[in-house]
Amino acid sequence: MKKIAPFFILLAFLNGKAQELNLPSFTQYLADNPFIISPVYAGIGDHVKIRANGFTQWVGIKNAPENMSLAADMRIHDQSGIGLYLYNDKNGNTRQSGAKVSFAHHIVIDKYAEQFVSFGISYALNQFRIEIENFTGQDMAVVDDRRLTNHNIDVGFLYRKNGFYGSFTVANLLNKNVDIFNDIEPLELRNYQVFSGYKWRSSSNSDFEVEPSGFFQYFESDQRSTTDLNLKLRFYNFEDYYWAGVSYRFLNDQLLEPLNIGPMLGLKRSNFYFAYSYQITLNKLVNYNSGTHMVTLGIDIFQGISNCPCTY
Image (cartoon, rainbow, N blue to C red; front, side):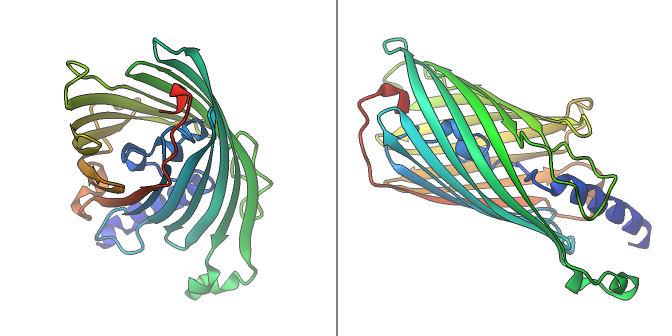
């Protein structure tokens, strides 16, 4: 274990620098909740949609990252929606918590071709803190409060036609305030995200649906980028449905060396929703942990039918 200690220390340092205002995105968005990665999805649907999500990363490693979040969005007019996203993220002795408030507007291009565009914006408030009360030994020299609050904005665009959808989002549009912890840390927190997929059925009466999708992220500060390749199979029983899928994540310069891969499954019965995913770690940590577990619980309430198909 002593041999891998330097590796864990380096990994924790890198994660700590990357963590601030860049929340980890695993497969939460695939639990029928793309709103958490882009404001443009707010208000698409005929209910107030609430999703609570929790995941524990690298199970088996002490002080491994953990995240809890609550997302809710709803339609406020025939063509507009709002949303709220709350989160609390833990990574060793670093903590960040905050909220995003979102607005989206949906426009009909062609009603009969089911062709729509959407625009969205989010205001984010994030607090990042180092828990110095947990420091021991030489770390006791750190006595002042290590806390930083940032405000930021996300903007996004969404295009839909029949079963196709594609969104482009710029997250953390504004540069970060000067960091009181580290004067060499990058101030650019922007990351660029593309999420696209297609829902396919053999006929309009089919109860079986196939949905391949991809999620691309590019981080401006260090030019790293990742891609998720996903596949979901969904079976409908009137308004209820059951689904299963798989996700494959890799760095874009290492296509055949995945970071993780894992199965997913979920269901919606009446107004209740449940999803579970398990991500198998495939990098150097594979020998020291049992993967990442994620659970999503949700409820759809207060149904309200819209006069505009852009929010169906």
